[in-house]
Amino acid sequence: MYLHLGQDTVITTKSIIGIFDMDRCTVSKKTRDYLTEAEKKGNVVNVSYELPKSFIVCKENGKIMVYISQLSSKTLYKRNKEGTYKILQSKIN
View 1 (tube, rainbow, N blue to C red):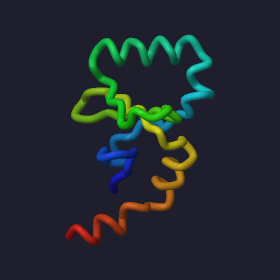
View 2: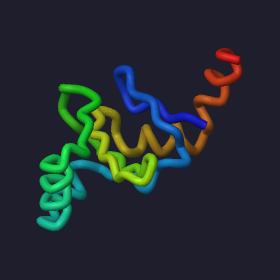
View 3: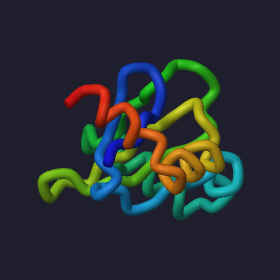
View 4: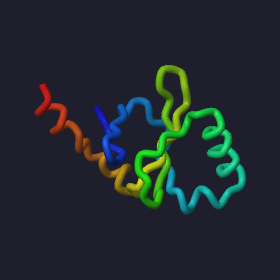
């Protein structure tokens, strides 16, 4: 199954490690350090240039990637839980 993160970015749900709220999680220095280090390594993809509301940590082909999205973590969680993209997948096939 797939999850749309915003703009033209879609990821597989199997690759998701976690979906995090930007405001709540970046209060911690450890989280800010983690995001800074991931950006230095080139492992951050900014999905939109709007105000970021969440970040999604994924493991793709053995590599950890962080996606920054303008969609809230609650919206992404609901989309993932409800299987929103089952319908999209059936239309493609």
